[in-house]
Image 1 (cartoon, rainbow, N blue to C red):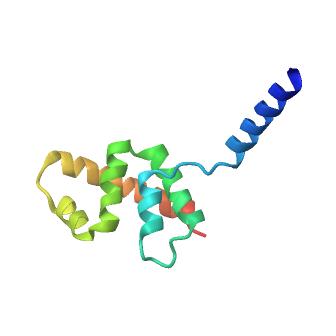
Image 2 (image 1 turned 180 degrees about the horizontal axis):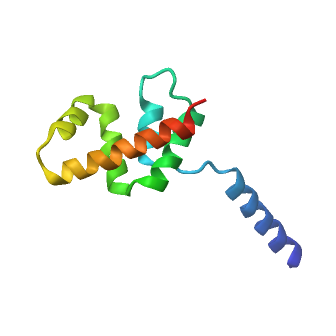
Length: 103
């Protein structure tokens, strides 16, 4: 009785260790982009910085810029206080990601 239970527990542990981690919104958008520099390692690094510096809603907004770069320009030029606050956070994130993930 103990042996089958131990085998099942070991199998679950092995599956959880080998299962891929779920990509965040920025990593997913980065990987789907057509940029040839967008490697799994770089996109993952950028997502790690995003996880440390941006709220999830900010990450989703930033990820939308990969699909629609004009949206980034609209947000940057916006007169709305919320867009200006987001843009300040986004620039800080970008600067940190560039410094941390540059190879």
